[in-house]
Image (cartoon, rainbow, N blue to C red; front, side):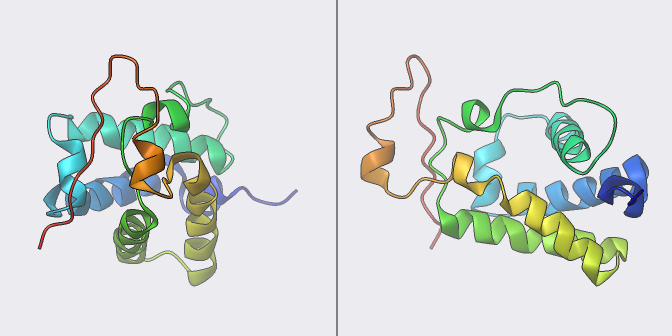
Length: 141
């Protein structure tokens, strides 16, 4: 039986270290960090770890919201996702994972972009957010 990516990267301890490093970078970033103002970093790290652990083959089931629901009010462009991916790559590389494991991790992560990426501000503004306030963060100059 083929080893899961979750087990191959070193399981929960390795994933937690990567996500701590990753979110340290995200929260410090002048653009990405603005999406997380008012959100406890440890909770965001936990949710990301739970989500990715399930997708990488861990036995535990992700208990959080579906991605499209959790990100519905956020205007997320491909540029933001590419920037996020670069920070995630740095965090994975800092963990010292082999190149093939890094590639597999990023491939799984990227598989969900279509659920949260917005192709145009015009289309995003048509989204029925009910009582939620849209979160549109301008790129810093």
